[in-house]
Image (cartoon, rainbow, N blue to C red; front, side, top):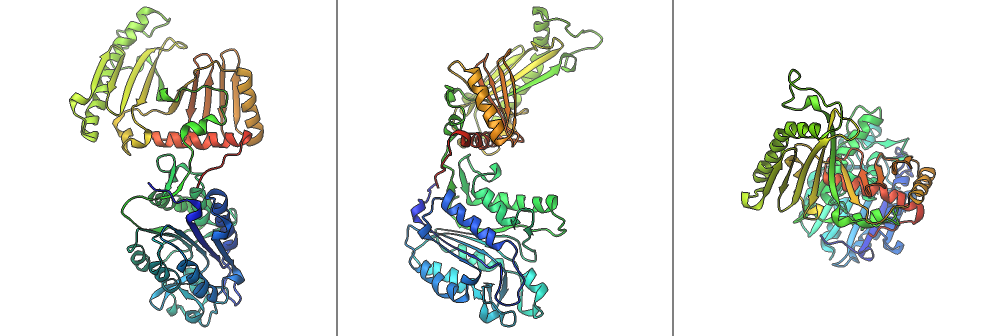
Length: 499
């Protein structure tokens, strides 16, 4: 996927919070615009001279009709154009229209601007064939205030759809669907949609990140459609819904932003001094079950092992042989059904309480043994070793496995300086929060980040374990781990993300 360089990006930001004439205020529109500007400069590294921002009295009808056209006319073929608007918007006179500083409530048609005239048509006529348009507006607040409601209607999606059909890639992201309000939040001091939009664009939410590295047209759209209604339901008293809408035209998924940091870089920064064997990284699930709960255990004929012994280990292996074989066979059949693998592409083996399955994508291993800490329990360890980059896995690869991994394990090649690592995490605890648990007798260090991700260092077995909170897939685990350790990285060294 191609990524546009910062110096090829141009932007126009418009926000009308206060109006010259008696039109209701658009709460926090100015905050939204300034935050969008900061994202372009700080995160996207767009040169300030490439950004035009008109707030309130600067956002006149003349500025949009004349100067906006001029900016678009000067775009070249390699340019990407980004447009952001926060204010009142509506549909009238055959076009979606937006209000300006000097919009008059008794003459809306002549004192507002048609997006087709100032934005869509000029972009079609320009050399630029890559544009992103973000509009946080709705007609509802105007309809509640202005008596001539017959002149007002909700913005219509059809015009947006017609606009994006015509060039290499165009995307329209709108804060709400027709007939809905676009709500502000006193708690956030922003429009709810723009707040979530910027969180996504900054790479702060894993659900908006594709392949652990990219914010794309579809990943952003999918995140906003879920996050905004969820926030309104859980964190506001509004009874009506707000469902963001998007219209996207492109032959392929395109990149809005590349985060520019891979898993190895992200993990290295806060864990400086550890020689991590990334090539041996695996995904793992450790499970404890009581021996009496295993299939084949008879409460009349069998007794739970009271001690650790060879006899107890053999007994557990016998009980686990059936479940292990069944699980390996299930994964094997699902690989054929879902991935289209043939028998000759896979190798499966079972041996008592353990088994393996080798495929072109991964190697799966399941092992069981008497729990070393509890004689009456069995410890089941499942490990998944990838043979390809995580981004090359099928989107729903997890459905192959009856039990999915919940932690990332990276072997540590060198000896760990226990005191030094504890000191690093104590500093993290002081500066960004979280919780540290450490035991120098067992060589155990566990740090839980503010977002709930656990980083565990086992100095006896030389392992780094990462357990992201709430991750359901392999990609989510990697993304969650990255987000957490990037926060740690800021303690010692500010990290610059490339646009």
